Length: 280
Image (cartoon, rainbow, N blue to C red; front, side):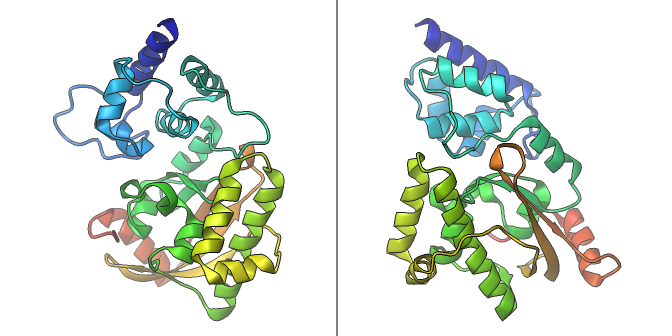
């Protein structure tokens, strides 16, 4: 029982210390606590509010590593806290050879400092882990999506159309880069079943992905140019840079507009408009 009690205690304490603003959420009105509400943590982690309640009361046992990792991200835990969180939950601490999914405080600081730009953090297989309000305003609020719908490669090849347009050359380069980076991750994390599972599901769901996968591309991302179609300010042409090789192998994606252009002014306006009328 000590382990269960410790897990419930640290979950409650760490939830209380994170503000909605730190988690990328609007603070709302009528708050009785400066920390996250249970429903806010549930939203960030992609679980039900009832499940968070049962975890905090010690009535839910053996949360999965995926749930623990999602809760750790929502709680903004550092490495030592994350490892303790896993141990007292009775789960193995994530080790080498497994897909990194922990957003470190230094990566969070990068996202926080770039608040004027759309920024997001992905795993090496493009599971979306963290985003700022500008990313949500530009591409829609990711908090309403769960599971595979938060994976960029799945969304591109097997999901509904995205509000993004490339030139024919950019489209080819982007698709090739997605497949090539996934194959690179398969070689880097052979012991992680989630990588192979994503590949298998994409092969089954998308003939276009299968065709490209069978060509065996491998490679990193380059700068790309995108036209983002928004309901708030119309089309915006942006440069998209993917920063790789950082802490834990995570991908930091940053979008910028050329200075002095109409696109830069639209991005400034989007910052004011925010999520009002954003894509679902």
